[in-house]
Each structure stands twice: as structure tokens, then as C-alpha cells.
Image (cartoon, rainbow, N blue to C red; front, side, top):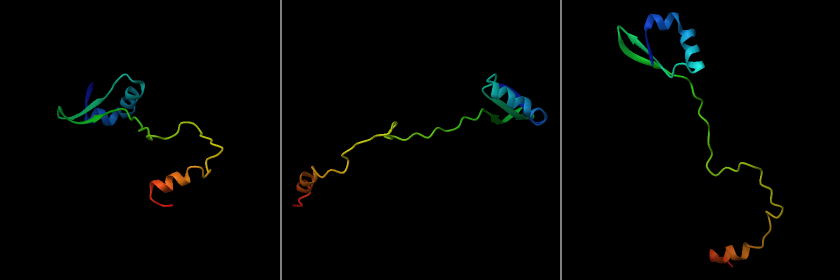
Length: 79
């Protein structure tokens, strides 16, 4: 991991970003008077994941049929 001082980072920000984008550097430490104060890393967008979400369209021809209604009603004590 490369370490640069604040002035180098300020003057060479485009070049530092290029190193990160190309993958040549995984991170760049920015230091003030030799003491690390910040870390510049590549941006990785968060990928939204949905647990249980269907990955394909689901089609069911008889989705609204009432065949099981009596059984469900009996389970809840409703006749």
C-alpha cells in the first residue's frame, strides 16, 4: 500500500485515482508529516440482495382457487 503526504495527494489526485481504478493499488494512505491520517480505497457499490425474492417470473394459472379455504378456516376455528 502506497503512502503519500497531503501535498502529493492534492497535486496528484487524478494519478492516485488511476492507480486505484486500474487495480495496481488496493489502497493509498494519506499522511500528514509522516503520520497516516486517511486511507483512499476503491469504491465498491453495494449490491442490494433480497432474501427469498424470486429470480424468475412465477406464473400460476389457478392462484385464486378456493379449494383450501374450508381447511384453512377450520384450522382457525371458523366454520
